[in-house]
Image (cartoon, rainbow, N blue to C red; front, top):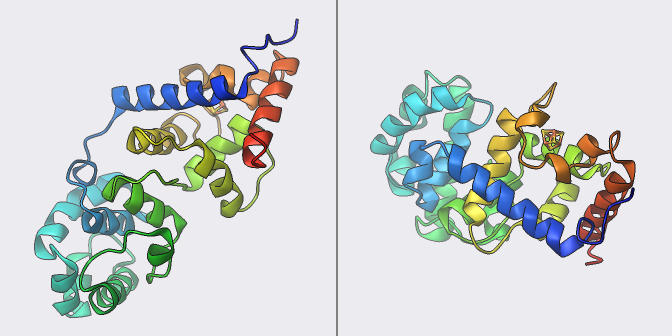
Length: 241
Ligand code: SF4
């Protein structure tokens, strides 16, 4: 038997998807310090430290770093060597220190020591790409913006069954899925689900709150439902809704 109209209604599916990700995240939320005190600057620094580094390592180093360099001005005034010294337990510390120094200089020179609050302003900063730009907007400024990392891309790829390749294509889809309300929980939820449930290698679909909305999970058991879900996700991606 094929899916009923309700199961294949695009608005219902999008609302359900948002609600389930948000509810799941509220139950599994991790109180990392960078998720509790969320100024744009703190979010920016934490996300730079989290690049290619485990959460556990950043958990040890971030609190000390943010006390030493509590603002772009203080970071800009510090010699690169001193910044590197503070990062020596994180790895890639020289490269990271140079990035942070260049970033602080740009913030001080172009924005008077503030963090820009627009996507275009953020992605022009040294070492800031779409992931960090979205994180600063959503988590730091409270604006609904997509936060896309490799975990979120993998989850969205499996969920939608769309053969998207580039981060820009996933961003196009995610801009249309991010809700106005609770976008922080939605974004943290996708990141955490991608990290711990729809993980690299074997996904833990039995623990996933999105399993009946997932094309990859339903295509063998309920092919007609998978087809209708795929059409909905494709329509969202192509802006036909
Ligand atoms: S059901 Fe499985 S494949 Fe689909 S999004 Fe969830 S964990 Fe990933």
